[in-house]
Length: 444
Image 1 (cartoon, one colour):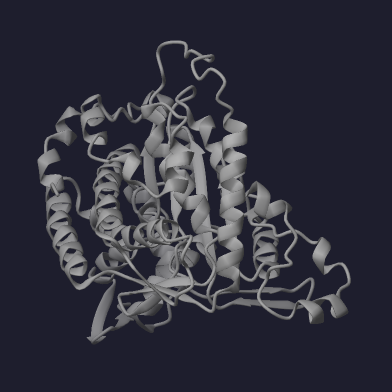
Image 2 (image 1 turned 180 degrees about the vertical axis):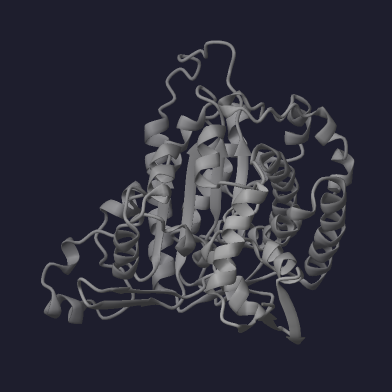
């Protein structure tokens, strides 16, 4: 298993411009050789079927988008990571200029077509009681996808109706950007919390309704151009940045042969996969819970991989990649969880699943690529100017009580899109005095 150290010259080979969609996000042809290290034929059969009809330059995008969509429909599957129960849900951002193939993402969305049209007769227990309470219960299909063009109140209302679960899937970056910039629509804070399954609480005064989602499980797929990205995630210190996996796509210079596949029918192919995914979903709904884990040896290799690469990335590229590496550990664990469930989908009559070595190493290979992609995206995003930081810091300073804890400061910083790392640096300035471990006061 090679480390990212082997790619330590990639920063010098990139030509990153910061002007609108002239940004060069080329992953270079050198990566074509790297792609061979990911053996698509070794993937679980469902994922092989998803990727098989796509050209090589799109396979990785389709793999990660399919995994992310599937992560939204894996109920009752969990693992323990850093002493906390975590679920499979993933966030994916596909970045590319117009004509770079991002439109293929809509095929991954079709994986949910059967689930969203089916009736919930196979849900766990209590069906008779549900029919007594609501005779139309069998006529209500499962809905997974959450509309991105939404207000924050509408977003949490839908989440509440669906038990805190769903998939945000949006291929038009402007839609997300416009919503996040509006006074009523910015639900980015909810996404940041949902990534770690942190509680989301909201009170709607107009309806006199308190919504309390104890353990939200949201998956996200977004695609946009580089310019649109900067309107969704405004800078590299935005807390959303490190929660996403990134795929970078390139425009195709030649006109594609649209008849090359002959009689192959991708629509039927994805319909068949959607049926298989629906069966898996129904099986998992009936489950009392399936706990995923690594073997002892895999755990040691995992820690070694991220320990080495964290040091390399933060020293070679940028210290703010620290958060991305930390969260990539959790993302990798979730990818392994999904691969393992798909590998064993015909024999899930169990309460425990242990990752196989093949799926474990596939997850690490993906993590290696995703970390390098995160570095490239970080170079695209602008850093906050001193004026922007001063404005936010001034607001945070004014809102904090005279005496407060580190966690209170970080929570306040998060509300203004400031990373924990930036908040920590802010607390070390002359504006504050440390009074005890984890405790500060303002300096007048």
